[in-house]
Image 1: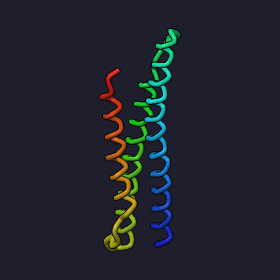
Image 2: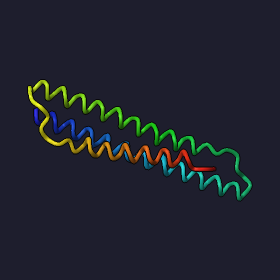
Image 3: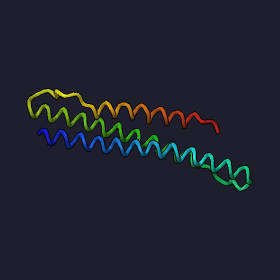
Image 4: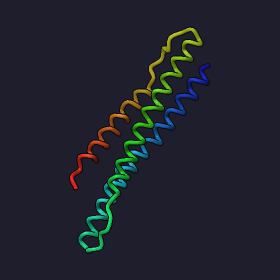
Length: 117
């Protein structure tokens, strides 16, 4: 049972790493597209600027994905504790880390959303 719990923790932490990278990629793509569009405007060759939508979508989707993965982890941990006939005694540090990254992802999404172009 302990190996199962540790395996779930590792899986959740890998999801955490992946979604954090996707949030950072969304923000970088948004700002990179904005910089590229401003450079093209200055050169007079601008035609489209939809990088903002792509950056917002990537950031928002990865934040929602982490929320779903965290809820699934929480449900599975409770189910395993019920199967063992005990309460989950240890502090769930991966859930704390997920909560922090969910706050970060939400903040980045709304900062990108409020960016006036």
